[in-house]
Each structure stands twice: as C-alpha cells, then as structure tokens.
Image (cartoon, rainbow over all chains, first blue to last red; front, top):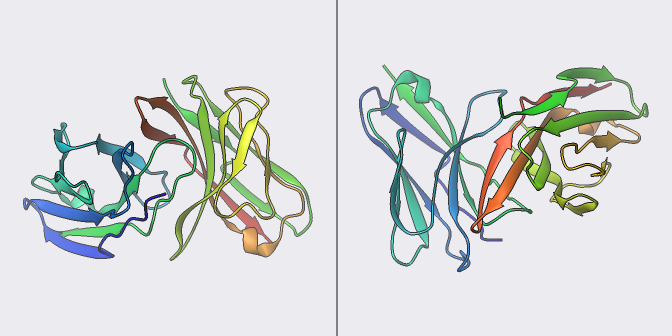
Length: 108
Length: 114
C-alpha cells in the first residue's frame, strides 16, 4: 500500500480557498486517490476521487500532477462548517490505510 | 435510503464478557471493513471482507473476529473484551468500480470496556 503524508494541521479564514496537499511517492499504477472528510464522532465522508489531472465536483477540486506522486485537495471559499479532519487515501478496495489526516480549522 | 447501520451505537461492558457489534449495508456492496479510532491514532483498519466468506486482517486484528455469511452483514465479535479495546468503531462498505474504492461509513459504535 502506498504510504501517504499530509500536514498535521492547517488554519484558514472564512471565504478563503484552502489547499491541502498529500504526498504518495509509492503510488501504484492502478491506484486512485480518494479524499474523505470527518467531523468529530462521525464516520468519514467521501469528498472526491481522481486518477490523474483535475477532478471537480460541487464541493471540491482535486489536482493530480502527471507523476501522481502527490495530490492537492482544493476547497473553495471555506466556511466554519468545513472545520474537520481531511484524509487522503491511496489504493483500491480492501486493505485501507487512512493515515493521520489534516485537521483544518476555519476561523471567522 | 442507502446507508450503513451499526448496533449498538453505545455500549458499556466489562472485561471478558463476549460482545458482538452488528453492521449492515443496503447497497449490495462487495467490500466491507471495520475500523477503530482512538485519540491521536487516527483510523485503523481491523478486518475487511472482499465478498461473502472472504475476510482478511487489517492493521490491528488482534482480539477481534469477523464473519461474512451474507453480503449485507459484517458483524464484529470481541470474544473476551479488554479495556484497551475501548474505542470508537466504524463499519464501512464499498463497491469496486473501475479500480476505485469509495467507502460509506456507518455512524459509529462507542465501546467502553471496564
């Protein structure tokens, strides 16, 4: 399984764009990159998933460079309710390693 | 509504008293997993199952058992619980689609072992 590395924590202010980068140097050819969001005492929730280049949905964008050794989750115009832990996950179904995640704190 | 359900949501028990936490999903997913989450340690996978009668160990399987007799259910069994198994447990399910893995998590079970 590819090991992932993310910043432990990040701070932001309401209305700003937040970019969280995840390193996954040993990503395998078939691996997808998935990001989850978790609020305290709740199960993680799927945000976005991609394989290469750029993926965008209604809540976030995911940027993946050509070498796929890293990825960046972009949250546009964050609000206080985006305060959560964000996990980068690499690999397919079965054995999953979530890593430590990034605690994002959005301030007013 | 597509969902993963877990029961019970909260449980306080004593050391050595066998317990089962149930997990059920209504999405016809092949894959199911159990995780535990402890402060400062993140989410750690206990066991996973890739289909009926197919289970495998995750990162922290010691002290736990699972079974997958039906596609929708994946119970977690603690034969002899100990205080170090006090934790927040999550069940998840996913379908494998074109090499991806999107997991849907249950609401969690908070277990306290005295």
